Amino acid sequence: MSRAADRLRLLINHLDRSPAAISVSPTSAQTFTHSHPQQRLRYTFDTDLLTPEQRLFYEDNGFLLIKNLVSDEDIDKFRMEFERICRQDVKIPGLVVMRDVAIAKSEFVPDQKAISKVQDFQEDPELFRYCTLPQILKYVECFTGPNIMAMHTMLINKPPDAGKKTSRHPMHQDLHYFPFRPADRIVCAWTAMEKVSRQNGCLVVLPGTHTGSLQEHDYPDWEGGVNKMYHGVRGYDPQHPRVHLEMEKGDTVFFHPILIHGSGMNQTQGFRKAISCHYASSDCYYIDVTGTTQENIEQEVKEVAAKKYALNNITLKDTWYIRGRLVQGERISM
Ligand SMILES: O=C(O)CCC(=O)C(=O)O
Image (cartoon, rainbow, N blue to C red):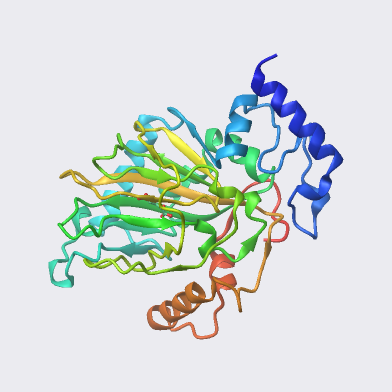
């Protein structure tokens, strides 16, 4: 038996004797049914898909990269749909279209060059197909359990940096944006739509930080400006080892919402594209973020909702409740 398998067995035996170490929803602990329920570690389930090495890697590091998971054909279709959106050939309800802060309003042209991100594409059947791909869901289930909601969807079109370093994404923890828990039953799938490297601003992760807690976030005081809602984590250790996730088209990384990560500047002339979805177990539950470090993001979301959609009494929870879509199993408490 491999060393990883031995270590996994030791960890499982340890957890069997200390159930308090496993974090699940207080309302529905027993709804996570699996073929090997005793083989549940803190961050992963055994669904017969992950090797012992892969499970341990995620348990220890908070991310797992799977090569060649999404076909070129699918990625080309997602790219074509994105281009249709940019040309304004289609109008998708609820879709949020974002521009890099370095692009002045006056420069707007209906073209992908003006758009740095689209998010909330749950009503676009072609882009949303990404969130339902069976080969992605098979992995997602290892982290969320069998009842799966697609909560947050994004296609990121990182533009060539205009010289102000605004194409960077500050280091952050995705949980800052989410008023639902437990964190361990949430996972992001992020797929490279082309080769991503340090040159065009690949993801950068701080391995192992998923075992920490949610920290305070706010706008970094970057001289050249920072994109709307791109909050950065305060006070992380800049000396913490970093991993630059260089990936090929179709490679997919799954990562935990407390993992500190970000992405670098795009120093090429091309637009670096990636598509992603945050999934949560439908057994998760909403929390009230009043009085927590997440109050500032709730306030900002409320301001946008009031200004753009004339929605005045909305909470952070409401904005997620209406976006979430069941993609596998049963919708329980989400
Ligand atoms: O794709 C990127 O550059 C970073 C994406 C990311 O970390 C996020 O949107 O939370």
